[in-house]
Image 1 (cartoon, rainbow, N blue to C red):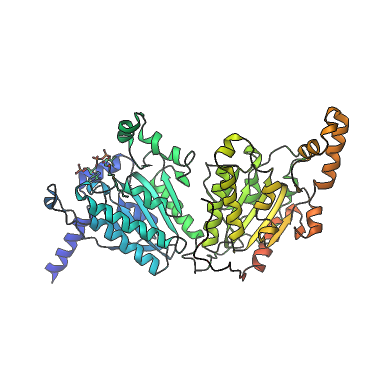
Image 2 (cartoon, helix red, strand yellow):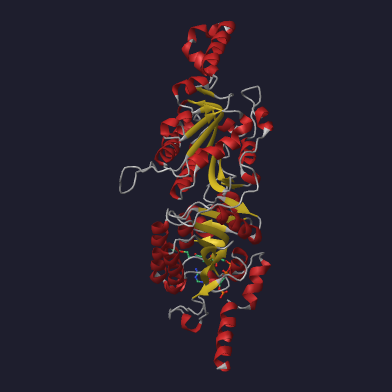
Length: 510
Ligand code: HXC
């Protein structure tokens, strides 16, 4: 019997060794951890249960019958993050470069099926060379099976992808269909085709980092939601993110013990808005002051920074925060902001996360660059997302809420549940200067006259009271009490039930 137990242990040791010492050292030399080391960091200590450790590929072409390594380039299983079940697969770059074979794909789809059936988040750690070249269509089919499951799980369980090394070819599309993509700076890159193929096809000379590094995907392309400095930071931040997320679309939003009083008053907010309406201020200050313990997990922090999106807790429960940022382009809505905001609002709505919207928006960005780039459709995405969302929606207008942007930003007209404004709010079709110059074009030649017209328009609309008189705002609140008012509103909306008309699915402007 002892003999049998020892044999099992020996096989386990062999499987855990991955591609061997040389390849593991090469992995470490690049500043990367191995697949199993990453899983150990992601999950609660000792909680990982590995599946399919002995699976090997079945390929007999190109001499592959002589190259078999247990595990076949991916480590899969489940464990817990702060006690909650999470499924995980981690590409093992030390085994065939983490490339995907038919059996490797089966290991992943097994975990995907279990995560979906048992309603728990799934995290994929990517570090791989794409389709196993020796396997041809078997590998392509394997990818297809993974993609199909990504789509079926979308909106049912949170799916998170972390790119921690090369991620090319077939490996990029699965992350692209998950809820979030995170990247490790300098050691990871993502592209459909690498620099060599780019050179052949387009004659463009580009490095892997320039083509698909974190520096590109967190800023220009917006493919990645955030970049981290190294593997350890990325994995610890994933633990933090998972704490914010419900396990599925039918699980309640997590509720953690709050050490921050829901009634907390913050007097400094009374002076947050500068006297000069054109002077910016940092909306993040307001977010950090209303969030429990100032804890805010920002999503897409380097892209479309004129709109802020991220997760926080108020009174222990997760909320999604969407806020215009006056510090960047005066908080204007452009195409990128429309897409970024819409995707986040839809994520929150999928998973029943209430949305708190903080508004200071001068409107949509004018100009040919925006119009040619599809501003109408991209702006409509955000409008559509807010309008279809059935989760509790709480809105606070701090200063400007002009034109279409007023309507878009979770206004009462889009089923905002509780709409507040600070006394500094200005709700109008446009800014007073622009409005007076259109209405009183004849007075433009007389600076005194036009100034008087601007003042007149300002007096009429540069306040929240016209909207409050119509009932478009539920109340004008003191800035210092914002956290308390939002916390109370969230509590009041806890049992909200609202359903949209039955449909197969909607047709959001893509
Ligand atoms: C089989 C692969 C492999 C692959 C890497 N390896 N990629 N084996 N299939 N796709 C193996 C290598 O042979 C090597 O084995 C080990 O993994 C490490 O690879 P290196 O090249 O030595 O590492 P590095 O220099 O760091 O380069 C990593 C890399 C490069 C950039 C990922 O390996 C690479 O370009 N690979 C091919 C990428 C690619 O074109 N994939 C196919 C995409 S097409 P040894 O034994 O020496 O350790 C695709 C279509 C799917 O995915 C579409 C579905 C819709």
